[in-house]
Structures are given as structure tokens and as C-alpha cells.
Amino acid sequence: MKVVVSLGGSVLSLDNPGYMAEVASLIKKVAKEMDIYVVVGGGKTARKYISTARKFCNDERYLDRMGIMATRMNAMLLNSFFRKRIPHSIEYAARMKTPVIMGGTTPGHSTDAVAAMLAAKIKASHLIIATDVDGVYDRDPKKHRDARKMDRISIKVLRKMAGEGWREAGKSAVIDAIACRIIEENAIPTFVLNGKKLEELENAIYGREFNGTVVEI
Ligand code: UTP
Image 1 (spheres, protein in one colour):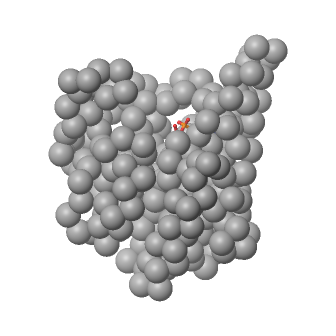
Image 2 (cartoon, protein in one colour):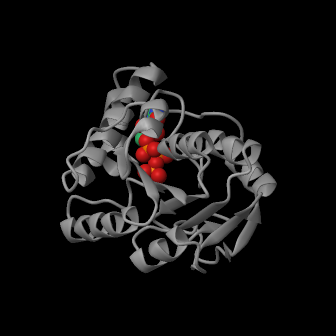
Image 3 (tube, rainbow, N blue to C red):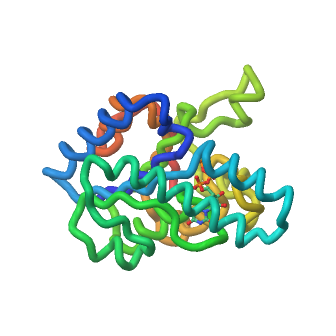
């Protein structure tokens, strides 16, 4: 079995090294039984660098490259437990022995899209989007107290929610539009969940029932 996990930067925090150690031990455990690839997001670090640099520069590709560096810093942090090479492309990642830990690749999309591209390339059995909320909601749960989590959502509806194309550096919807397109075109079974809840992450990795959202292809 092959699984790709997009671990949102919002889930990893420098203030919570204990969580990082727990994720690393989960990856080690899973790697004994299947091929696991983890694509790490840039989180707050990426957003802070991008929003500060945006005051001086409006070159989106330049800003994206700063974001990519933040994702690779976070990947290096998680990789401290593994001390492996961090691939800069999905082609290289696909050739590596697992577990693979990586960040972003090229400008114009988020690490969710990298994870979707990698899942398509290696023909992963499933893709997990581990974010900082419990799944896909009908509206932003951080802004609306009455937002409702959906146990299932069709990829078509999710694509409508995500909009079209890449917006700007540091900004994305639940899953970015490019990731949604790749998921639909390659019919990748996709699960969205809260990456802070390691039991749910483990359940989804092993294909067991989990609390989150199943994306129907
Ligand atoms: P993230 O994947 O962390 O973006 O990459 P995000 O949508 O803010 O993710 P969450 O909120 O942690 O889930 C950070 C930024 O780095 C650039 C983009 O500007 C992105 O917004 N990036 C990342 C790229 O341009 N290409 C990549 O392959 C990855």
C-alpha cells in the first residue's frame, strides 16, 4: 500500500515539539508496513514571510519561492528524526526509498497540490489532507460558529468551493483548486481530517473509519 499525507504547516508548531515527535513515531511505525510520503506545509512561517515581503514586492512567483523555503524548513524539522534527503521534485520523491518527507516544489500551488501530484505519480492507494480543522465544512469554521462539517463531499462540490486556479502566494481554500483538479482527474481516494488528532490520522492512513471528510470521486 502507498499513502501520501499532506501535513498542513498549521498543524506543526515550533511550540509543540512533543507533537512532532509523535508524528515522527507514527511515520516510523507506518513505514514498516507501507510506503509513506509526507508533504509538509509552510504554515505561519510561510504566511509571515510572504505578507512582509509583499509590502516591498508584488512578484507572486518570488513570494511563492519564499513560501516554498518555509515548507522545506518545516520538512527539515520533521526530517530531523529521519535525516534523509529532502526531494525538491515529485519525480525525485517517487524514486526514493520511503519514508519520504518533503516540502514544496515549484511556484504556483500549495503543498496540497504537491501531495496530489505525488499521489497520482506513485498511484497511491489514498491521499490524506491533514489540516487544523476536523474536515471540510460548509463554510469557514473559524469564522462561523454554526459551520457544519460534512462527512462526505463530492469532488465536484469541493472544486466549486475551491474556485479556479492559483490565487496568490500564501493563500488557499480548504484544498487548493489545483489539488482538487488533480484529485478529480486521477480519481485519487482522498480523506480530509484534523492532523492534530493523531488517532484519526492513523485510522485514515490504515484505511479504517476516521472522523473527518471523505471526498467522493
Ligand atoms: P503551503 O502549502 O503551506 O500553503 O505553502 P498554504 O495553503 O498556506 O497551506 P496550509 O495553510 O499550511 O495548509 C506555503 C506557500 O508556499 C508557496 C505558496 O505561496 C504557498 O501559499 N508554495 C508552496 C509554492 O509556491 N509551491 C509549492 O509547491 C508549495
